[in-house]
Image (cartoon, rainbow, N blue to C red; front, side, top):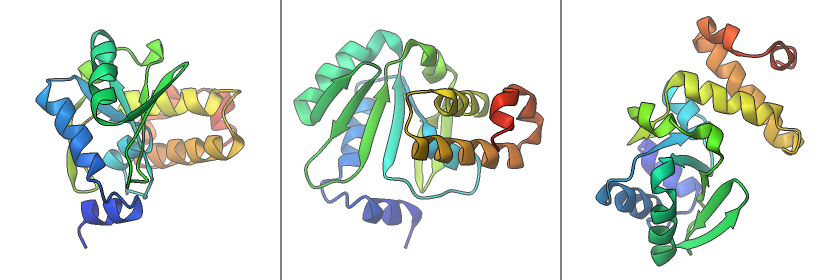
Length: 172
């Protein structure tokens, strides 16, 4: 089974939500990129996730939200848009936190689980994971996954170690 088919099987994406979402963004010329675990998978040995975390260019977020509401279920939270579709367990979160401004502009296409997507730079992916691991409001289980992702990145790219705060390194 190919990687994309496996990922779609894991998330039970019977609605082709993944392809529909990416297709809409591409068709409308949206500047976006993958961050989070999917982006980590673009740089190191992949692990399966049911999440797809994205960032959209700041000047396009309002129009993207309107576009996605026409096709999918969208729930707005303080720093995310959660997008879903019936018949798919894929969980898409679009980060709206201003700290991610610039990620989409620096992104480049990479293959992730058999799909070519714009992916945040390695440095931006690491930074996003550090922010997540240091977020005091984040669930403990999510923080552990963030720490594992940081560890995986540093194992493959040890030259990035100086970009990780000592308090996070101490937890690895």
